[in-house]
Every structure is written in structure tokens, then in C-alpha cells.
Image (cartoon, rainbow, N blue to C red; front, side):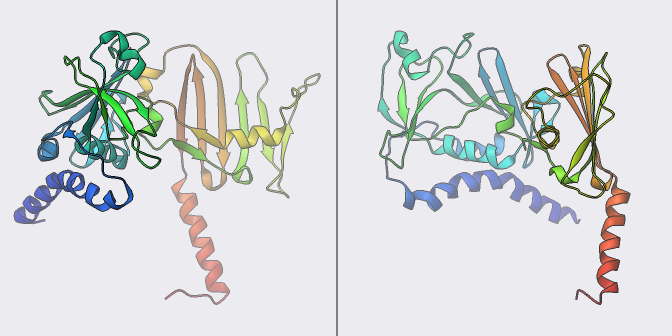
Length: 318
């Protein structure tokens, strides 16, 4: 790429977030009643290129979203990738938020709006900090509970206040400030139909392994292999239910392997699927470690088999 082309690309990248903030509202005004007030952060859209991190805290919980050009990641979770659309949606809403109705200035009533000190152990409020690459704040707000019917059936609002300011407000923005990791990442780790699972092995220390295999003649049927003598499955623990559960895994949180590896091993599950897919899930204390391996050679071979089958049948693709 020529230097001039790269420079142009860099400018487009820096401006992309600012443009999104500026245009999103214009594209959606037709569907919402107009409820306005003073901007929560008057200059946030103009400062979009400076945004480096979004810091969220609630009691002892914390989450930091870090920006690298147009990509976002969890800075305190080993740089795990974040859904850029989710971050962009939050920034757009914050930039467009307006303070419509003043509420209480009495600290004793903050909790009713979930605007108490977000550093408290049982706080329901959340502190939102948008900072630059030096850690200097660009925008800060304490975000409270939503009021879904604040401005009519189609327009809700969120209670907010700024740190150090006793005044609370009802804003016209529907702010989703979640500290749940699954709300920021692609939560689905594995979504594998039971018919695609070839073998499932579950090992628990001190117990014989539980092995379930797919029927060679019927892909929709699985059987238990080598059930130890005198043992039987608990009532309600059907083979099909076990296989279906193993094929559907969602993330709740993520950690670097080194940080998550502490604790004694409580069990391991290994899922083997079509095409050389292998997923190993290991439990250590309250942490589940997941490792996924896909056999690319097998996948390529499978595609080639399908292609050859089409050729043999006289089917071609132009």
C-alpha cells in the first residue's frame, strides 16, 4: 500500500466512530418521540477519536474495554475480542443522551434510583468512564436504573448523575452499561447438533470414565459404552440430554489460561465431532477451561469430497 493510501485509510478509521455517532440519531429519529434537554456530554462526539478505553465498575466488579483502531477487546481479560457493534451502540447512546428531568439531590434517596456510590459492596449503580490513551477522563457518569415508560411506550430513559455532583437526572437515553462479559463478547462457544457429535468422554477423578458414542447406523442416536457393573444413570439423566447439553456451550467469563489454571482438577469432558473437531473442557475449582481444535485438513478433504461428488454427477458451477 502506498504511504498516501495508508494515510487516507488512517483518517477514515479515526473518523469512523465520530461519523457513526453523528449519523445514528438522524437515521432513527422517525421512530421515537422527541424528548430533549441539555446534553449529558456536549462534546463527546467531537472527541471520539481520542477515546482509548471504556472503564466500567460496580462494587468489586470491573471491566475495561480497550480500543485498537476500530477493534475492541477486554483489557482485563487477556485482550479477548469484543463485539465492536456493542461498544459503538453504547458510545452513540451516551453521546446523544440528554438530561430531561432533574430528580433528587438527597444522597439518602440515591439508592431508589440505583445511583448510590458505585464503589459500595452491594451497589447497583455503575460507574462509566470514557478515557483517552493517557487515562484522562473524557466523560464520566454514574448510571442507574432504567425507566422503560419514561417518555411513552416507545421511549425509555435512564437515571444518571455525574461523580461529585449531588444532582440526579432522568436522561432520555436507554443506556446498557453491563459488567457481564457475555454481553460484550460472542457468547456462543459451541453450538453443535447432537448428530454431529461422534464421541463424548467425561472423566471425574476417582471414577471410571463415562463414554458415549454415536451409533454407526443412526447419527441421531448415541449409546453409553462400557457402563461399569453395578452402576446406572441417575433418573432424568438420559443419554440424549447429556449429548445435547455438551453440544451447547456459552461463555460467562473469560481468562488467560495461566490465570485460570489454579485449583484442583474436578473433571474433564472431551467432545469429538465430525471433521476432526475436538473440544476439551476442564474444570478447576469454579473455573472451566475450554480448548478447541479443528482439523483443517479434514475440513478441506470433506469439501473436496463434496466437490468431486458434484463433478461425478455432472453438476458444475460457473
